[in-house]
Length: 496
Image (tube, one colour):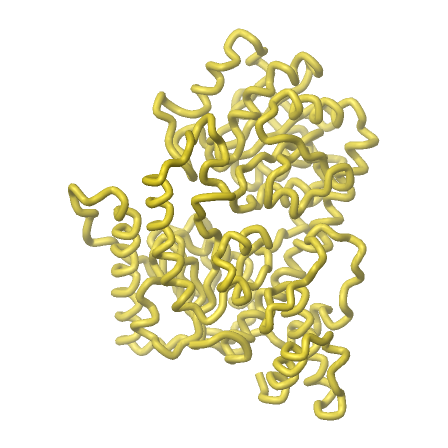
């Protein structure tokens, strides 16, 4: 980025002005337009250089888009011919679309470090290197420090691999990474002067967020439990300090971080591919693993977890089944997700959460109309959403799942929990219905309303897709992600 563009960005931001209020006399038109796109991006999507937060909620459909935010303008800010290092334990993860876009340009040297075998093909032109953890956690370690020890072990392993890259001559001009598992802890020691853009997903807090939200299953927090949560912040705090700039998908997720860091965290979603996730009124019948055939027009209710667990409301959903079947006896309830283990929170002490909560409703529901599919491929998942008559999404106050926005992109009529960050996306009665997370009967009644009132379901579903198109579409989000990368790499925002 040229110095005059950077100057225009910083001038407008420091004065708190819209970019069209900046002088056009000092800058050429092309540079001014590029700067307008950058400042609009900073003002509307991020927690900007001077902390000018955009006041409108993410779901607002009433604010006309700034003309400077057109994708052709933002492309002026995309990285050109950069050496970029990506860090993600399960690469590409949240960098899927970014990596595909940059690889398609063919001008960058793209290298990634991770632990897991990729779950999808890595684009041509991207070098993916796996590193190994060579030591186990110590025995008899004080339990409160186990979290930071495991992250230190991963940070050491990733740092060793990064150091090897440096010895082999690789010099990144930008590092993008997810710090959640500790991998990024020591990259600043290897490349002290390289800008680091960190994907900050969530900052654990002892009060007001997920911890202690569910008294039935989490119990009443005591000071020891809060102490463990506090120690879990060691890794994110160290990464915040080492980062040049950060990005997170929702305003709620940014709000979980300490207030003194929030002005250095941009809010940009990863983006939903709305050309794939879209409604299909002619969707073909779908046969489930148990042989059940689902058809368009049937009262199909869908519910999705990566793993069925309380963090994503599986207990409320399962407990709603008897009342939902009483209200809509012919409903097909399709529950998607791995039934063993957990992704978040504590494991079930008595087997698996699915079986534990099914025990609560034993003898009070028709199991022949409840279908647990296990994990579905994306090619199976989207057709299921296209057949869904009502989709349920529940969550503790925690990170937002892609599945909610994908369901909305498919014009599903959604019943969501009245919890953040769902409330950031869904406005009750406008693009979905919101219910109390802890009330199965309220959930059942809302789903039944959608199944009985198809005009309402259609109205909410159309508005849901429009919300995604307006605020979370891949085209809009990817342009902003790439613009942010360019701004950080150039030094226009952030520090090293």
